[in-house]
Image 1 (cartoon, one colour):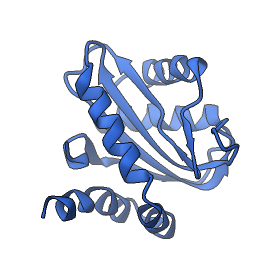
Image 2: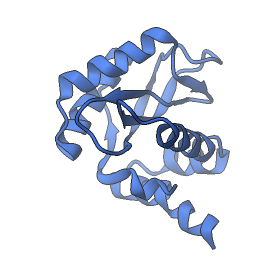
Image 3: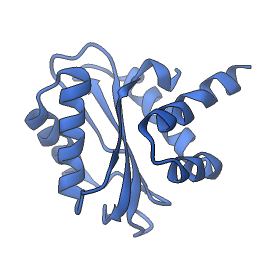
Length: 154
């Protein structure tokens, strides 16, 4: 699975004003609404419900919030680079400045897990995270996230 199949360039944003985990989740709701036409309040609610089960901050400044949503047919992604890291209750207690959210259909099983694994592998690469942090431009971030699909396939 390529990230380019689940992530639209319109779903990539640099955020300057998120001051908390709650505000970051609201950013994802707004982003999902503008890029995919999803209902922002429902996205935020679903992400928060998942966070209540256990934080999705995976360490090294990275979070992978995810949720299942009604009325979508495939896994969708959204990416946020934060100018100022926020506390996300990550496993290593480090604040988060890179966040990739996944939205999956309610009945999605393997597809959701494959997407989560793909994003996790990508953002576990220190070189990719360094490039993301050094390029606060949405178009460049989208290219960085999706270009390694092409490199790995070659």
